[in-house]
Image (cartoon, rainbow, N blue to C red; front, side, top):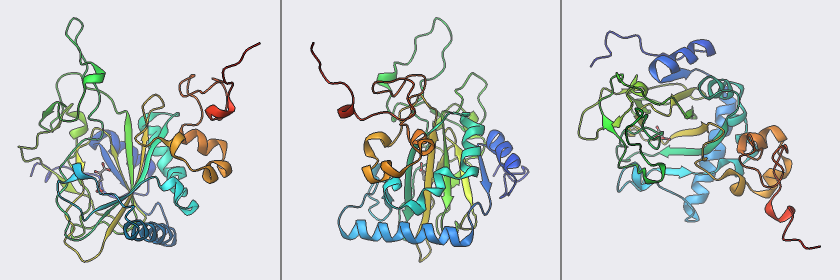
Length: 307
Ligand SMILES: O=C(O)CCC(=O)C(=O)O
């Protein structure tokens, strides 16, 4: 294992240390970002929702995560599933980490829970930012954005590249809502893989580490960092909540503007709506007024008119 001589990130309450770890290793752990009571409130809400969705056949598994895994569950679009959950994407530490990686203006790309249950299958290592076109040398042909596929992403080793690579366009702030342990399938990461310019080659063994932490802690990874959920060999579910952030010009994973329920939108602050993408960024995302604080639905904008 190449990491035995390296001081890998450990859980820290210091945001500056966490930001340095993110830049250097591609991930960090912030301990106890939520109190025990806050983590318990989130866990109660998410598990209640998960059971209700499963018993109503409204539950989702994600087939690409491990073919044939119908054990794990994703509870999507938590924005709509209880105001007790809103503290996670709004949390100061999550926003500071997002600002460190993405800058002042960023969007919530998705807000979901990944519950891994005992008996799950291994999730392949992957990078969230697989969709970025590779940098090019002037005169070379370039990758046409509309032709990019996940399967066609450039694969290779995890070591830092010696050629130009892309910066981060997204950041995943994963909340450990239960303890994350080796036994219950704590997330695996490959340190420094964010600098490789590659996604993992599934035919190779990569030097991954599993990141354990107490309930209420954060594991954040740069969207270029290779990672995947672990195997749950315990007897209890492992609950993680992902607050995934992206740059303001990137398409969000969840269509937040269309997918936010009216009763949630009606009571949200302008700042929260801006995080969801309701505020145009340099005109992008507008519906009629490029400088408004919150866009209007199409039905409230001018329709075909005649004099
Ligand atoms: O649940 C985990 O540990 C990992 C989740 C993951 O891979 C993702 O959200 O991209």
